[in-house]
Amino acid sequence: MKLQQFAAIAVAIFVSFANGDTSPQDLALRMLASIENRGQATIDSGASTGFIQVGLFWQALAVVTESAPSTVENDGLRPLLSESLASSIPSLMNSTRDAGLPLDRFSLGSAMVASQNASFLPTIEALNASLELQPRNENGGLWYYNNLQNLTAYQNLSYLDGMYSFAPYITIQASLSNHSSQPLAALEMALEQIQILHDICVRPSGLLVHGYDALKAHNWANQTSGASPEVWGRSLAWYSLGMLNTLEIAARSPTLKGLETFETLRSLFQETMLAQIQAAEHSKAMTNRPGVWQVVDRPGNAGNFVEASSSFMTVYNLLRGARLHLFSDSKEGQNCTNSAQSIAEEIYATVSQQYLITYANGTLSLNGTSSVASLSPQNVSYEYYVSRPTELDSLIGTSAFSLASYEMGKLQS
Ligand SMILES: *[C@@H]1O[C@H](CO)[C@@H](O)[C@H](O)[C@H]1NC(C)=O
Ligand SMILES: *[C@@H]1O[C@H](CO)[C@@H](O)[C@H](O)[C@H]1NC(C)=O
Ligand SMILES: *[C@@H]1O[C@H](CO)[C@@H](O)[C@H](O)[C@H]1NC(C)=O
Ligand SMILES: *[C@@H]1O[C@H](CO)[C@@H](O)[C@H](O)[C@H]1NC(C)=O
Ligand SMILES: *[C@@H]1O[C@H](CO)[C@@H](O)[C@H](O)[C@H]1NC(C)=O
Ligand SMILES: *[C@@H]1O[C@H](CO)[C@@H](O)[C@H](O)[C@H]1NC(C)=O
Ligand SMILES: *[C@@H]1O[C@H](CO)[C@@H](O)[C@H](O)[C@H]1NC(C)=O
Ligand SMILES: *[C@@H]1O[C@H](CO)[C@@H](O)[C@H](O)[C@H]1NC(C)=O
Ligand SMILES: *[C@@H]1O[C@H](CO)[C@@H](O)[C@H](O)[C@H]1NC(C)=O
Ligand SMILES: *[C@@H]1O[C@H](CO)[C@@H](O)[C@H](O)[C@H]1NC(C)=O
Ligand SMILES: *[C@@H]1O[C@H](CO)[C@@H](O)[C@H](O)[C@H]1NC(C)=O
Image 1: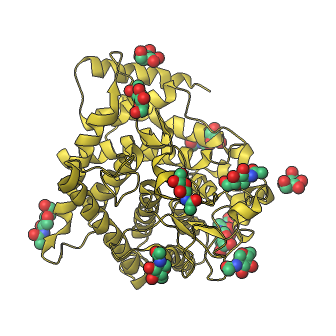
Image 2: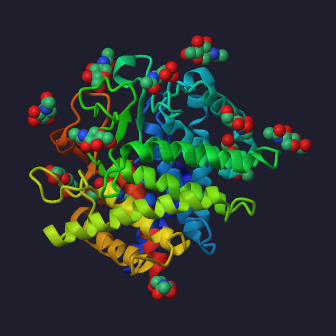
Image 3: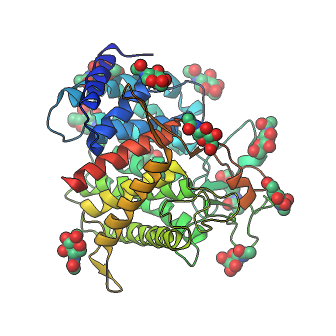
């Protein structure tokens, strides 16, 4: 579905491009306009992997237009969000069916709660009820996907990816409750899931592998911990962005900021981002390229490649984390905020140079985003990840580019 008012905005944005404006803020808006022009702004009902993509697109729309001074571009972009949100209602109204979808579905719920639009309350209610139906492992960890069509391939698997959607959702839904104890209980639920994944998936480097199999039934599962074998860039980026979004929501609540639960989550976020800063610095030293590789800790290895979506998500995580003062000033003599900002700028510049395509009419395209990687196969080796095909104009990559560009604009202004 194309939206009339947005087409008009696209024209306005392209005119500004013709005038030579290529500031990061302008690139962020132009990428969103290009997404709409490609017809990618609304949900494809029935698809199970589409939710997280649309969830990230909505986040990009909300962030890029958030507090900016009122401009023609921003005012035109805002209605697109509620219309795009509304397109997902038919896919989510049945909680039994919702429970058979991946945790990704909750990224749509977060955007609906944040919109403060009462027309979404019945959908939020259905979605929320589906949480009770989500199976859990013995350790309390939520399954990522109760796929009834293919249970043996998916049962008892938990993925880092799920935290992009679950953790912010459970935290923000508490704002709909009238009980004053609710916000803390909700933040504790978010932290519990994040911590379970952390404890099983973390490597000595501080980087986390893709997920684990509580049954240790897949051939790839570590027979002691159940952990999967490789650090996949995008799953680590989803997980980190989930923590960042959760912290941002919690920080808005005067009762949560400064509490131990908040501080534990903040320091887990910092630790995870510091490991990613080190990985990018290591990559720069080894290959002269600071981007995020498909398999993060093997820069330059045969078949491996710098992956666009995780690189731009990481730029956003670093810059926004720094701007919101989520990195304590120094650790082992290093100024974390400075390190985060300088490596993020380098990642943004080199990965844009490699994958961003600008057409004469102002449209932007982005190459180099990996297609989805799953833990459902029996073999999720290094070769599995590096042989995933890449996609042009994947909504995950282009939305992440808008988010990263927005924060680059903030850094420069
Ligand atoms: C609320 O969402 C509906 C779509 O469900 C939309 O038609 C309406 O304009 C939105 N209201 C506001 C105030 O944004
Ligand atoms: C909800 O979905 C379930 C499972 O697909 C189905 O059995 C049930 O009939 C649906 N309920 C309604 C009210 O459509
Ligand atoms: C959503 O579900 C959770 C857990 O099942 C519950 O604690 C919470 O109160 C529900 N939220 C709303 C807004 O109904
Ligand atoms: C696997 O999931 C089921 C359903 O939630 C649960 O009963 C069982 O304890 C889980 N097994 C392990 C090893 O976590
Ligand atoms: C919270 O209280 C308001 C006003 O009393 C009521 O309309 C609303 O339904 C309540 N919300 C929940 C989730 O109980
Ligand atoms: C499996 O996990 C255990 C416990 O975390 C760890 O000590 C061991 O090195 C892992 N094995 C492999 C092959 O990674
Ligand atoms: C670390 O760097 C940030 C950003 O440049 C600066 O605001 C902060 O004061 C620095 N902290 C210390 C302890 O030098
Ligand atoms: C802009 O140019 C690109 C590349 O030629 C084309 O695919 C796209 O449809 C054009 N967009 C508009 C809005 O004309
Ligand atoms: C995108 O990348 C693929 C794989 O490297 C390449 O074959 C293709 O030509 C690129 N597309 C564009 C439009 O640059
Ligand atoms: C179940 O998942 C596995 C692993 O992803 C896949 O190889 C298989 O084709 C799937 N089976 C069905 C019936 O979809
Ligand atoms: C897993 O698959 C890769 C190719 O994708 C292959 O090189 C490797 O030998 C396989 N490993 C196992 C244990 O089957």
